Image 1 (cartoon, rainbow, N blue to C red):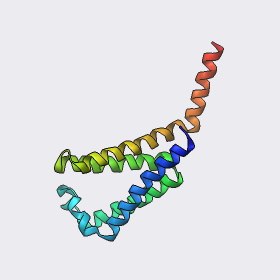
Image 2 (tube, rainbow, N blue to C red):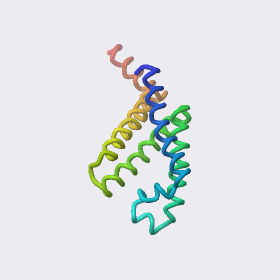
Image 3 (cartoon, rainbow, N blue to C red):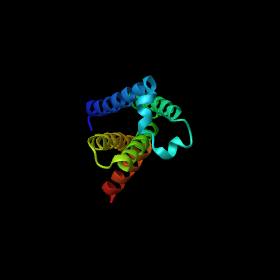
Image 4 (tube, one colour):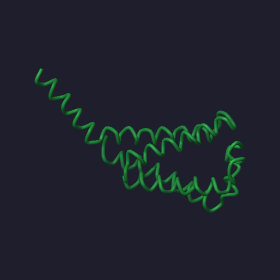
Length: 135
């Protein structure tokens, strides 16, 4: 995959995560309605929204700058799985659900690419190629 394509995908995911994170921190009362009902019995929804907003910002910036990319992309996938499953159980298939599934796949593609660019993967790929050419 080209370097430009990688940067565009990372920027796109970071833009969404950081934007929503800022909105959650700026107006947690609005977003509290999205907190699943079972969680509201455990902790104040406003606290959950603030923590979620901060996590979105941190993960978004980590993905953007490539900081521990494999871990930050995995966290983005986990966050999007949490969001998508919550939306599914609250409202089923909606426009917001469809949009967030697309963001989940974007995060997944960044995660998968981070695996293929790891030194371990590159070494095992090289060993496989060497074994095939010597065989």
